[in-house]
Image (cartoon, rainbow, N blue to C red; front, side):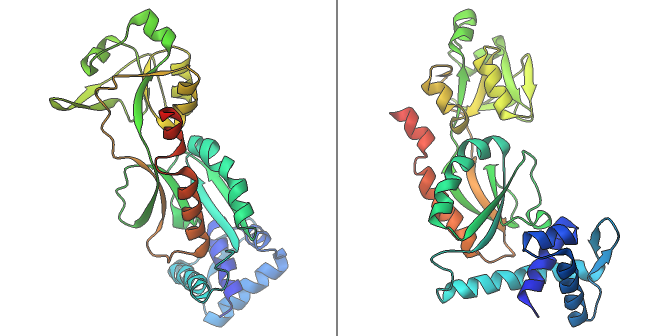
Length: 301
Protein backbone atom coordinates (compact mmCIF):
# COMPACT_ATOMS: atom_id res chain seq x y z
CA UNK A 1 0.00 0.00 0.00
CA UNK A 2 1.54 3.31 -1.12
CA UNK A 3 1.87 5.93 1.63
CA UNK A 4 1.54 8.79 -0.87
CA UNK A 5 -1.75 7.33 -2.05
CA UNK A 6 -2.99 7.27 1.54
CA UNK A 7 -1.98 10.91 2.05
CA UNK A 8 -3.91 11.87 -1.06
CA UNK A 9 -6.97 9.91 0.04
CA UNK A 10 -6.99 11.59 3.48
CA UNK A 11 -6.79 15.04 1.92
CA UNK A 12 -9.46 14.09 -0.62
CA UNK A 13 -11.78 13.15 2.25
CA UNK A 14 -11.51 16.75 3.49
CA UNK A 15 -11.47 18.73 0.24
CA UNK A 16 -13.97 16.56 -1.71
CA UNK A 17 -12.05 17.61 -4.79
CA UNK A 18 -9.35 15.55 -6.49
CA UNK A 19 -7.69 18.58 -8.09
CA UNK A 20 -7.48 20.49 -4.79
CA UNK A 21 -6.20 17.48 -2.86
CA UNK A 22 -3.63 16.73 -5.54
CA UNK A 23 -2.49 20.36 -5.70
CA UNK A 24 -1.76 20.32 -1.95
CA UNK A 25 0.57 17.38 -2.54
CA UNK A 26 2.12 18.73 -5.74
CA UNK A 27 0.21 16.40 -8.08
CA UNK A 28 -1.62 17.16 -11.30
CA UNK A 29 -5.35 16.29 -11.43
CA UNK A 30 -4.62 13.38 -13.78
CA UNK A 31 -1.91 11.92 -11.55
CA UNK A 32 -4.05 12.41 -8.44
CA UNK A 33 -6.96 10.61 -10.05
CA UNK A 34 -4.68 7.78 -11.12
CA UNK A 35 -3.33 7.43 -7.57
CA UNK A 36 -6.84 7.08 -6.13
CA UNK A 37 -7.69 4.50 -8.79
CA UNK A 38 -4.56 2.53 -7.89
CA UNK A 39 -5.47 2.64 -4.19
CA UNK A 40 -8.98 1.38 -4.98
CA UNK A 41 -7.59 -1.36 -7.23
CA UNK A 42 -5.21 -2.50 -4.53
CA UNK A 43 -8.00 -2.70 -1.96
CA UNK A 44 -10.51 -4.16 -4.37
CA UNK A 45 -13.23 -1.66 -3.41
CA UNK A 46 -14.47 1.73 -4.55
CA UNK A 47 -13.52 4.40 -2.02
CA UNK A 48 -15.02 7.51 -3.64
CA UNK A 49 -17.99 8.54 -5.73
CA UNK A 50 -16.82 10.76 -8.59
CA UNK A 51 -18.96 13.48 -10.18
CA UNK A 52 -18.05 16.39 -12.45
CA UNK A 53 -18.13 18.82 -9.49
CA UNK A 54 -16.80 16.94 -6.50
CA UNK A 55 -16.17 13.56 -4.97
CA UNK A 56 -17.58 11.96 -1.84
CA UNK A 57 -16.58 8.91 0.12
CA UNK A 58 -18.40 5.66 -0.35
CA UNK A 59 -19.43 3.63 2.68
CA UNK A 60 -16.22 1.65 2.28
CA UNK A 61 -14.27 4.90 1.99
CA UNK A 62 -15.76 6.21 5.24
CA UNK A 63 -14.81 2.96 6.97
CA UNK A 64 -11.28 3.07 5.54
CA UNK A 65 -10.56 6.72 6.41
CA UNK A 66 -9.70 6.38 10.14
CA UNK A 67 -7.42 3.45 9.35
CA UNK A 68 -5.62 5.47 6.68
CA UNK A 69 -5.15 8.33 9.15
CA UNK A 70 -3.81 5.93 11.77
CA UNK A 71 -1.33 4.41 9.29
CA UNK A 72 0.00 7.86 8.34
CA UNK A 73 0.35 8.87 11.99
CA UNK A 74 2.15 5.61 12.76
CA UNK A 75 4.56 6.12 9.87
CA UNK A 76 5.40 9.63 11.09
CA UNK A 77 5.93 8.43 14.64
CA UNK A 78 8.04 5.51 13.45
CA UNK A 79 10.27 7.88 11.48
CA UNK A 80 10.60 10.15 14.48
CA UNK A 81 11.51 7.24 16.79
CA UNK A 82 14.66 6.53 14.81
CA UNK A 83 15.53 10.17 14.32
CA UNK A 84 14.21 10.54 10.77
CA UNK A 85 12.87 14.04 10.49
CA UNK A 86 13.12 14.52 14.24
CA UNK A 87 15.30 17.62 13.97
CA UNK A 88 13.15 19.16 11.27
CA UNK A 89 9.55 17.92 10.92
CA UNK A 90 8.22 18.02 7.40
CA UNK A 91 4.90 18.50 5.65
CA UNK A 92 1.99 20.86 6.13
CA UNK A 93 0.65 21.58 9.60
CA UNK A 94 -3.08 22.35 9.37
CA UNK A 95 -4.33 24.49 12.24
CA UNK A 96 -7.71 25.92 13.16
CA UNK A 97 -7.95 28.66 15.79
CA UNK A 98 -10.35 31.34 17.08
CA UNK A 99 -10.16 34.39 14.83
CA UNK A 100 -9.15 36.96 17.45
CA UNK A 101 -6.56 34.83 19.21
CA UNK A 102 -5.17 33.62 15.90
CA UNK A 103 -4.68 37.12 14.57
CA UNK A 104 -3.20 38.52 17.80
CA UNK A 105 -1.10 35.66 19.12
CA UNK A 106 -0.65 32.97 16.48
CA UNK A 107 0.25 34.86 13.32
CA UNK A 108 2.98 36.99 14.99
CA UNK A 109 4.73 33.79 16.10
CA UNK A 110 4.55 31.94 12.78
CA UNK A 111 7.71 33.51 11.34
CA UNK A 112 9.82 32.29 14.27
CA UNK A 113 8.21 28.86 14.14
CA UNK A 114 8.94 28.41 10.43
CA UNK A 115 12.48 29.71 10.87
CA UNK A 116 12.97 27.02 13.51
CA UNK A 117 11.37 24.33 11.32
CA UNK A 118 12.10 25.33 7.70
CA UNK A 119 10.75 22.09 6.22
CA UNK A 120 7.24 22.77 7.56
CA UNK A 121 4.40 24.70 5.97
CA UNK A 122 1.49 26.11 7.96
CA UNK A 123 -2.14 26.21 6.80
CA UNK A 124 -4.20 28.31 9.24
CA UNK A 125 -7.99 28.57 9.24
CA UNK A 126 -9.41 31.15 11.66
CA UNK A 127 -13.00 30.79 12.81
CA UNK A 128 -14.92 31.29 16.05
CA UNK A 129 -16.96 28.21 15.17
CA UNK A 130 -15.75 24.98 16.78
CA UNK A 131 -14.91 22.71 13.85
CA UNK A 132 -14.56 18.95 13.65
CA UNK A 133 -10.84 18.24 13.47
CA UNK A 134 -11.13 14.91 11.68
CA UNK A 135 -13.73 16.05 9.16
CA UNK A 136 -11.78 19.23 8.48
CA UNK A 137 -8.49 17.41 8.11
CA UNK A 138 -6.79 19.50 10.79
CA UNK A 139 -3.74 18.37 12.73
CA UNK A 140 -4.42 20.64 15.65
CA UNK A 141 -6.96 23.12 16.99
CA UNK A 142 -6.40 26.05 19.32
CA UNK A 143 -9.29 26.43 21.74
CA UNK A 144 -9.92 29.05 24.38
CA UNK A 145 -12.35 27.19 26.58
CA UNK A 146 -13.04 24.73 29.35
CA UNK A 147 -12.61 21.41 27.57
CA UNK A 148 -15.24 18.73 28.02
CA UNK A 149 -14.84 16.51 24.95
CA UNK A 150 -13.05 13.33 26.03
CA UNK A 151 -12.42 12.36 22.40
CA UNK A 152 -9.72 15.03 22.23
CA UNK A 153 -6.23 15.06 23.67
CA UNK A 154 -5.43 18.50 25.06
CA UNK A 155 -2.12 20.20 25.79
CA UNK A 156 -2.24 23.49 27.68
CA UNK A 157 -0.35 26.27 25.92
CA UNK A 158 -1.15 29.17 28.25
CA UNK A 159 -3.46 30.34 31.00
CA UNK A 160 -6.50 32.45 30.13
CA UNK A 161 -7.09 35.00 32.87
CA UNK A 162 -10.30 37.00 32.57
CA UNK A 163 -10.94 40.42 34.05
CA UNK A 164 -13.73 42.99 34.27
CA UNK A 165 -12.84 46.12 32.31
CA UNK A 166 -14.25 49.52 31.43
CA UNK A 167 -13.12 52.69 29.71
CA UNK A 168 -12.08 55.54 32.04
CA UNK A 169 -14.62 57.81 30.31
CA UNK A 170 -17.46 55.42 31.13
CA UNK A 171 -16.46 55.25 34.80
CA UNK A 172 -16.16 59.03 35.01
CA UNK A 173 -19.68 59.39 33.63
CA UNK A 174 -21.39 56.55 35.50
CA UNK A 175 -19.23 55.80 38.53
CA UNK A 176 -17.19 52.71 39.39
CA UNK A 177 -19.03 49.68 40.78
CA UNK A 178 -17.36 48.43 43.97
CA UNK A 179 -19.26 45.13 44.29
CA UNK A 180 -20.50 42.60 41.73
CA UNK A 181 -24.09 43.35 42.80
CA UNK A 182 -23.62 46.95 41.70
CA UNK A 183 -23.32 45.82 38.08
CA UNK A 184 -27.12 45.73 37.93
CA UNK A 185 -27.00 49.54 37.83
CA UNK A 186 -24.56 49.61 34.92
CA UNK A 187 -24.53 48.92 31.19
CA UNK A 188 -22.78 45.60 30.62
CA UNK A 189 -21.49 44.43 27.27
CA UNK A 190 -21.79 40.72 26.63
CA UNK A 191 -20.27 38.08 24.47
CA UNK A 192 -23.23 35.94 23.41
CA UNK A 193 -23.49 32.92 25.68
CA UNK A 194 -21.54 34.57 28.53
CA UNK A 195 -24.23 36.79 30.03
CA UNK A 196 -23.79 35.36 33.55
CA UNK A 197 -20.61 36.54 35.26
CA UNK A 198 -19.43 34.42 38.19
CA UNK A 199 -17.32 36.08 40.89
CA UNK A 200 -15.23 34.67 43.73
CA UNK A 201 -16.34 36.70 46.77
CA UNK A 202 -15.55 36.34 50.49
CA UNK A 203 -19.02 34.81 50.83
CA UNK A 204 -18.43 32.29 48.06
CA UNK A 205 -19.19 32.19 44.35
CA UNK A 206 -21.71 34.76 43.14
CA UNK A 207 -23.37 34.66 39.71
CA UNK A 208 -24.59 37.95 38.26
CA UNK A 209 -26.90 38.03 35.24
CA UNK A 210 -25.81 41.08 33.29
CA UNK A 211 -27.47 43.11 30.58
CA UNK A 212 -26.78 46.19 28.57
CA UNK A 213 -27.08 47.98 25.23
CA UNK A 214 -24.73 45.79 23.21
CA UNK A 215 -23.77 42.16 22.75
CA UNK A 216 -21.94 40.28 20.04
CA UNK A 217 -20.63 36.88 19.06
CA UNK A 218 -17.20 38.43 18.47
CA UNK A 219 -14.78 39.18 21.31
CA UNK A 220 -13.01 41.95 19.38
CA UNK A 221 -16.32 43.73 18.88
CA UNK A 222 -17.14 43.59 22.61
CA UNK A 223 -13.65 44.85 23.51
CA UNK A 224 -13.84 47.72 21.01
CA UNK A 225 -17.33 48.70 22.21
CA UNK A 226 -15.96 48.77 25.75
CA UNK A 227 -13.07 50.99 24.66
CA UNK A 228 -15.63 53.32 23.07
CA UNK A 229 -17.30 53.71 26.47
CA UNK A 230 -20.51 51.77 25.82
CA UNK A 231 -20.27 49.88 29.10
CA UNK A 232 -18.50 47.32 31.27
CA UNK A 233 -17.27 44.00 29.89
CA UNK A 234 -15.38 40.87 30.83
CA UNK A 235 -12.43 39.96 28.65
CA UNK A 236 -9.41 37.69 28.47
CA UNK A 237 -6.18 39.48 29.27
CA UNK A 238 -4.74 38.22 25.98
CA UNK A 239 -7.42 40.29 24.23
CA UNK A 240 -7.20 43.52 26.25
CA UNK A 241 -3.64 43.70 27.56
CA UNK A 242 -2.63 46.32 24.97
CA UNK A 243 -5.67 48.46 25.73
CA UNK A 244 -4.87 48.20 29.45
CA UNK A 245 -1.24 49.17 28.86
CA UNK A 246 -2.32 52.17 26.80
CA UNK A 247 -4.91 53.31 29.35
CA UNK A 248 -7.85 52.79 27.00
CA UNK A 249 -9.30 50.35 29.55
CA UNK A 250 -8.89 49.77 33.28
CA UNK A 251 -9.75 46.76 35.41
CA UNK A 252 -12.42 46.98 38.10
CA UNK A 253 -13.70 44.65 40.86
CA UNK A 254 -10.18 43.31 41.32
CA UNK A 255 -11.04 42.16 44.86
CA UNK A 256 -13.64 39.78 43.44
CA UNK A 257 -11.91 37.85 40.63
CA UNK A 258 -13.93 36.07 37.99
CA UNK A 259 -14.34 32.31 38.33
CA UNK A 260 -13.13 30.60 35.17
CA UNK A 261 -11.52 27.27 34.27
CA UNK A 262 -10.63 28.29 30.73
CA UNK A 263 -7.17 28.11 29.18
CA UNK A 264 -5.54 28.21 25.78
CA UNK A 265 -5.40 24.59 24.64
CA UNK A 266 -3.89 22.78 21.70
CA UNK A 267 -6.07 19.78 20.95
CA UNK A 268 -5.89 16.89 18.55
CA UNK A 269 -7.95 13.70 18.09
CA UNK A 270 -7.10 10.96 20.56
CA UNK A 271 -7.27 8.43 17.73
CA UNK A 272 -4.06 9.85 16.30
CA UNK A 273 -0.53 9.49 17.57
CA UNK A 274 1.27 12.75 18.26
CA UNK A 275 2.91 13.58 14.94
CA UNK A 276 6.34 15.26 15.06
CA UNK A 277 4.98 18.45 13.47
CA UNK A 278 2.25 18.65 16.13
CA UNK A 279 4.76 18.09 18.92
CA UNK A 280 6.98 20.78 17.40
CA UNK A 281 4.06 23.23 17.35
CA UNK A 282 3.06 22.55 20.97
CA UNK A 283 6.60 22.81 22.29
CA UNK A 284 7.37 25.99 20.33
CA UNK A 285 4.21 27.89 21.19
CA UNK A 286 4.14 26.87 24.86
CA UNK A 287 7.67 28.26 25.09
CA UNK A 288 6.74 31.36 23.06
CA UNK A 289 3.76 32.26 25.24
CA UNK A 290 5.59 31.44 28.48
CA UNK A 291 4.43 30.93 32.07
CA UNK A 292 2.80 33.25 32.87
CA UNK A 293 2.05 34.17 29.25
CA UNK A 294 3.63 37.34 27.92
CA UNK A 295 0.32 39.21 27.90
CA UNK A 296 0.03 38.78 31.67
CA UNK A 297 3.71 39.58 32.20
CA UNK A 298 3.15 42.85 30.36
CA UNK A 299 0.49 43.83 32.89
CA UNK A 300 2.71 42.88 35.84
CA UNK A 301 5.54 45.13 34.73
